Length: 146
Image 1 (spheres, rainbow, N blue to C red):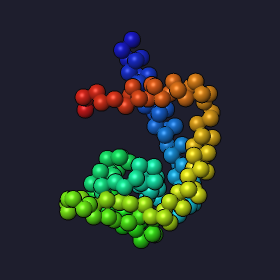
Image 2 (tube, one colour):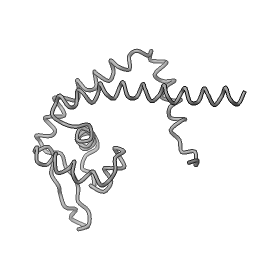
Image 3 (cartoon, rainbow, N blue to C red):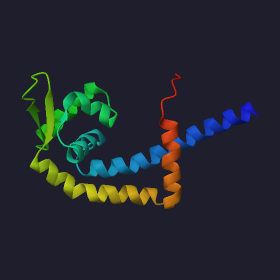
Image 4 (cartoon, rainbow, N blue to C red):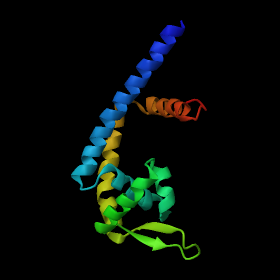
């Protein structure tokens, strides 16, 4: 019975990985067609929805290495989509702030991005999506292993 359970766990891992890859490829294609890479889009989306963010905390919020943030912020700043703003109360902290141009870009692109994701997920019923959310959250909890 243990062998069957282990085999099923491996199969689940492969299915999850392939599903993520298939969905991610479609989402990333759309983002790249709009002139950004997925990380740039994630930073811009974060700033649009959550407001100014300390540069030091962006990596943890969009799940990328903090060393990549400077490069991504530089690229978005060059495109005019964000600006760096010094914290008035702590010179060690710099915030990323979305510009009006960045807001206009996200407001133009995000609705279609959202529709595309919905279309990809609509293969599942509303109830199945709820079940998937619940189950995947359960898998995503830290187990203390590894």
